[in-house]
Length: 295
Image (cartoon, rainbow, N blue to C red; front, side):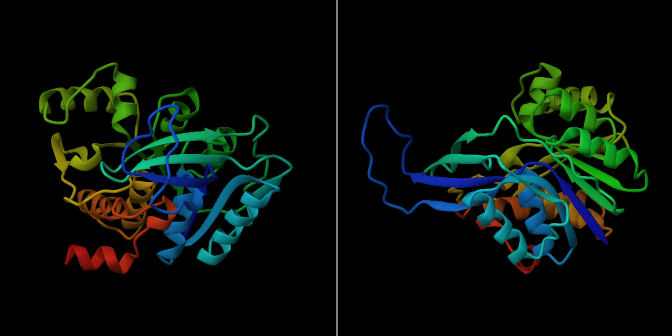
């Protein structure tokens, strides 16, 4: 079993606060900064490798301190870096203001305009996880490997993500993607509108559509039956990376032959557990922890 993750890598600096900062005011932090790698495909690769999957990352980092730290994290987690590319650019950096009272976060990202990926992917994979970054490489890799199952993290609407959605087997949409793509605003309690939104997305793509609904869980339609798979109740302090962790764990459970709604349930639990800890990649729970919670 081999899985390839193609997409964004960043270095995250999380700033924990008890309330969102007021403009033009000095604030002394009670908690220390949390620093670790981030990015959807990147975090996915770390989780899958820690969960004993032979995992490869195809991404670009800078030839700088942050890039070295990210590469070190990959190697420590056992991620294969054969397709990791280092360039003379600045590594993408995100500054994350996390409100530990509400569990919400605001992300400020600095990305080098010269960030590209131009390595050839010369291995075959059972599954591929993509997040819309490095679209040309991702699309070419998928087209050349029709037997590979593809899961896309459709977190926002743009041309790159929409093109990759057309060649993905699992289109996992955020609620923001669902709202922007359909131009329909909805509440999670409005089940009838959710069904309209789901059908509008599903008719445009060949893959299985899943809509994530934050703390409410995730939605799917199977055999013409709509199902919302609920999440679990936790005291969230930081939602950073929870979506990335959901996507990777969902792909893991799918790859193990689990039925899709069960895989969604397990992924909901994995993502929820991660929100109880500070930092994106640092909050990845162990597989044993998730299975113990399920039991």
